[in-house]
Image 1: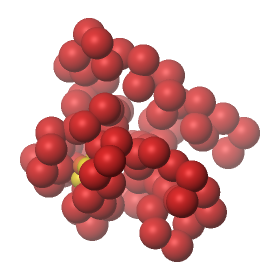
Image 2: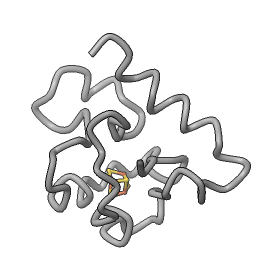
Image 3: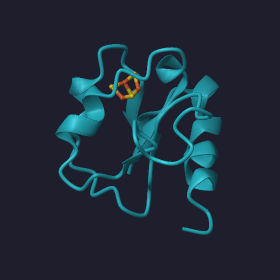
Image 4: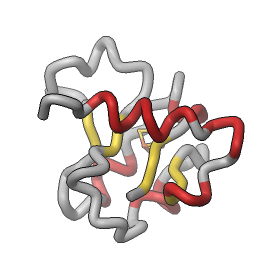
Length: 86
Ligand code: F3S
């Protein structure tokens, strides 16, 4: 799965949402929790790892799981935890 990390905070550009073929990026405008979310989240259980979102992000916030920079590894769990109970 792909993961959204630190640079999304303060940006939430949402270009990634437009290109995701399975709509696995949440929350986005119109979805519950959007106002409270400091960044957008990729649901690892829905992501098909197509990679379409990665080049779409203007601030390089999205990485394939294994390629997440060491200092941002915590975002793997943060994205996962956001969907616990889904
Ligand atoms: Fe965030 Fe980049 Fe998407 S800033 S909302 S991960 S396009």
